Length: 151
Image 1: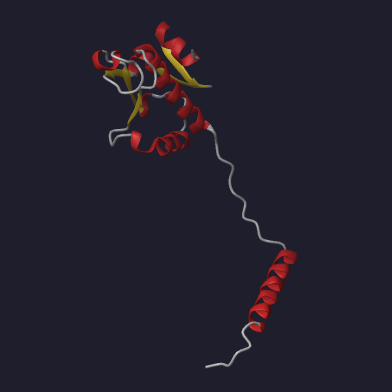
Image 2: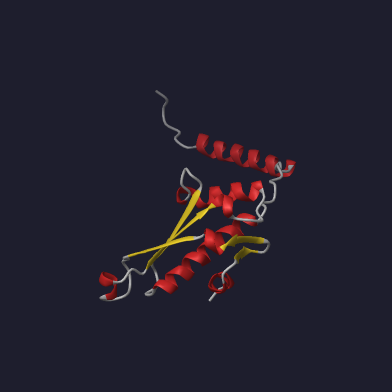
């Protein structure tokens, strides 16, 4: 079980990533019937966990990280800024709840990573010369083919 799942039971704040927390009462969990494993329980128990979190309730993220989180989440973020994560891979409500919290934690941790800026590079002069020589050589090979009459 993860740290995020453990701290939910204790109440208070849940640490999603180093320095990033959310209050446990800001999480909205809903349960529904799910597909997947479970035998007859699939038809009679609500084991699918749906987690709803407002992006503004996440504490400790700067604007750039929040923008990256919104981009990474894609269609899982509503127009109102709510992040929706569903989990139905486990057989129990508790297992799916923990899986949803793990996904949220992984998404936030990934958004906290600042991408390195790309440095523009140019091919070296020798590489350009070699490429042009190869083109010239291939052109000569193709030109030497045929040998028939022109139209």
